[in-house]
Amino acid sequence: MDFAAARKVMVDSQVRVNDVTDRDLQAALLAVPRERFLPAERTFAAYAEIEPEIANGRRLMLPRDLSKLLMALEPRAGETALAIAAPYAAAVLAQMALKVTAQEADSEVLGIVAPALAEAGVDGVVAPFTQAAGDGYDVIVSEAAVPVRPEAWLAALKVGGRLAVVERAGPGGKAVLYVKGASGLSRRELFDAAPPVLAELAPAPAFAL
Image 1 (cartoon, rainbow, N blue to C red):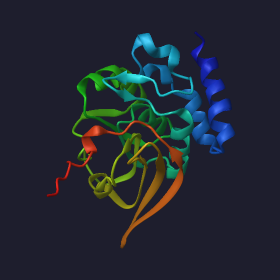
Image 2: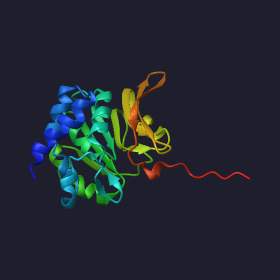
Image 3: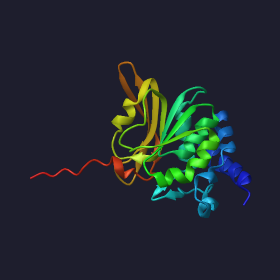
Image 4: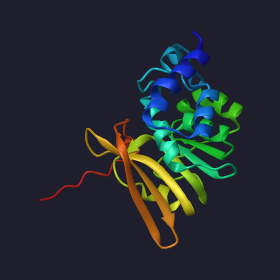
């Protein structure tokens, strides 16, 4: 399979046509080998309009959705970024000259994506998704959805930092952008999306008598 040709088709047919106009982001998507973030038997699905599985239910986000999330973040060279359940996004941000840490909760998932992350210059860590690995980030992004507002992730942003994530409590979800100001957080809805939800972040069931 000609992955370079498939990558160009992905950018032309799934990214540019969905109002992703950032030229640096387009160039990064053309440069990063998405197939490297999947096990060998699934690389054929890397550029299709699906969410291919890495391992144990963890999936890559649709290229359309991820590119729109990343554009909303307005990433800038030299910024620090945390990619939570987002290994492909981590490599794209690194290609755009950010200093990136990729956080995974499952060591098997990290084992699959680790070679591609290392090649991209991204540090990989295993830590529960209930907390962010470190703090003081300019940018945080996730390729998975969250069922509730991720307070621990927001706390890891520095003032001026941005978090892009899909909030999904039912069959549909909304991609949102948070910006941390000196006096609080702003929240803006971006577009509809429905990637798989991180089960680790689901609130504990409440029982009432």
